[in-house]
Length: 627
Image 1 (cartoon, rainbow, N blue to C red):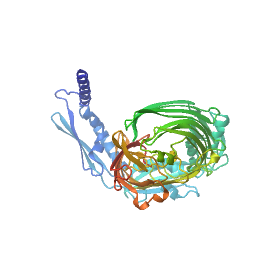
Image 2: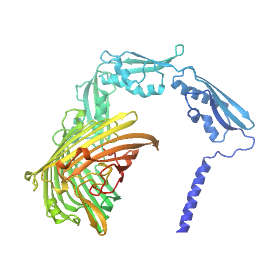
Image 3: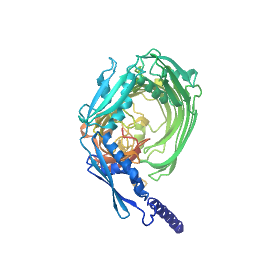
Image 4: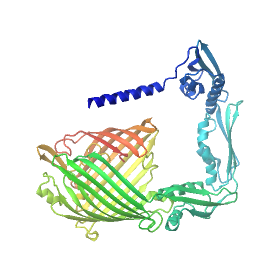
């Protein structure tokens, strides 16, 4: 083992030395000229490193090569171009060599001059497109310092404004003219709008039958509608969102008439998908080894259906040392797209759960039906969703904690099998700019579930869960806030009780730790077992602050304040005496969402009669924002 460790150390050391050696210039022969330094004089606006980094002589310096008079002038022109793009129309760059023996110093003397101001001249716009619409997408105002990079970034949108107004054949000649006498950079935008256009024939290729109908239903335009590039891009986005196509092209013709035919070409993605995964996790109850296997077939049993089979086995070792136990979730699901109309979805689901929490293990079969649809008939309408459903499960209980005495077992319903059937409704309004990395907007949801004998339930109750989130940008920082509540009217099934605490709830507590609980000694150690409450309230506010980037991924920090409580009965909830915790977090913004680490510190209510007594700190590591 020691020999293997030394070999590994030697190998790593050799790789590091080789990497360092590869960065050194090749050896020079005696008497050969070399570039010792590259300096810039007179510059105040652009830093030395920015100007020097892209020069050809800088690359020759790192390769150990000598100076080149031709490249000296080429690099001077490049530096001059950097200044011209910033609006310094009168800039002068004078290069020279200074030799001392074999060493050559390269010097660029810059006379920046005065930065030009901007003047925008717009001609040829049709009467129904105001110049103000163009200026809204060109963030350069008359009299402001000119910046070519800003102009270049806005160029693609300058023609889009006119095409969006129906002028599909519009053309734009744009250029920047230098008026050195007046110190102005004139942005000239000359439009030739052509005729006002409408959509013509729509041809769909790559699919037929029900899939072709689904494609047509997702187009944001129809024959006879006024032409719009926004309708084209929206259609393409919605077709990709259908998640059945690997490529999507929505291509208007490039003719000259006032009728624009469109060809929609799609290619089906692979119909069969296998997912395998696994991992290791730690929660308040156990150390857990997890597996995951999934298989899905798109287009089965009909073209618009997707069949999914999922199996999530786990093997857990209880942290109270009571032993090993399995945890299983098996699920089969058929989802139907466009079941009644475009964007409406139907769901049939059946499965089996074997789940353990601190108080008990529940196991049994379940089944569900679901339906969802947008309720506003426009491309914006998918942000307002209605979901309806029915679910039923048959449960029995085992491994009940010894701290849950017979009286409490009877009160919670753990002393017998349960059948819980519910009707569910949810209305969601999602006005966020980006659900994964939200900068601004609102999210609101109201969920209601009715347990009733008509749904097959032995319990009779109504469960209500409203939630509201808001996001506001303040410079680079995003201020985010949320509030969520929940309560029961009537019976309270034990598996539907509320818990709080954890990475996505109250960060001052571990997972499920904020809850009515019982405490006592189990196998020689003091243990607290939460079993859930009838009423919940959570609130939180946080500032998401960007710091830097690492390997093209954003790195940020979060300062948060979370409050909340879970109580046995609704009348016990005291908004003036919630559990509060403050904390800090780190974020790494990846393509799969933020990877985050949060540390919460409880500010009040941590005595022996409170949830998680004596615990002041809670650490959380997870993927995705808290809300």
